[in-house]
Image 1 (cartoon, rainbow, N blue to C red):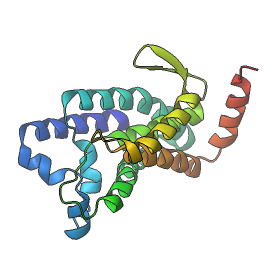
Image 2 (spheres, rainbow, N blue to C red):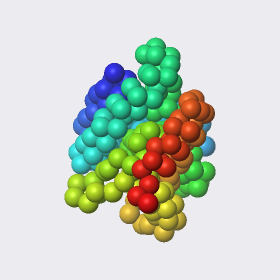
Image 3 (tube, helix red, strand yellow):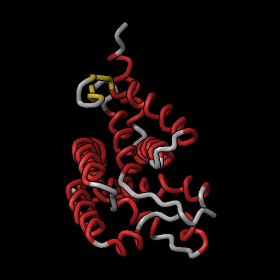
Image 4 (cartoon, rainbow, N blue to C red):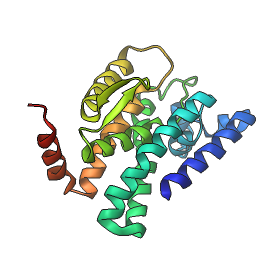
Length: 207
């Protein structure tokens, strides 16, 4: 339920951003304004904005697909719908903020830098999912099957490399730190996921 509510909110806010440039500029992540004008709300609101239909739909598709499982299998099963829903909502919202912290520090004096998107939260959800299903498969570019635990490691390596070397105007550090936050938060909230992950990982080893 929380996944669906957040997905709808992201869709509606992004739509408003598409149609109203002033709205978009007011709520996007701007490290310079966060630090110098103390507009801390941008650390969160930027996660509800997107730069294009493709950006929005891909993020929502992945978020909806994996978030619904994480919400139900991990958080509801451990804490029930009320407390579990609250803790899951915190995962999503705090991961947006966590994903923006590094770029806030890195670009705090760059008045022209900005970023948007739900990618920090999507990364957090994906890595929370990996703890429960290390050997399930995802499809790279919708074609190439790859185990989630392998994809997770490669994703971290690439995001860290791209945050230092890429010039594609994508905040790769948000992906990296969102993913790390998702792992740490899920383990902190539900420590039993660690032995569960180890058992599932060992059982699925191909040798």
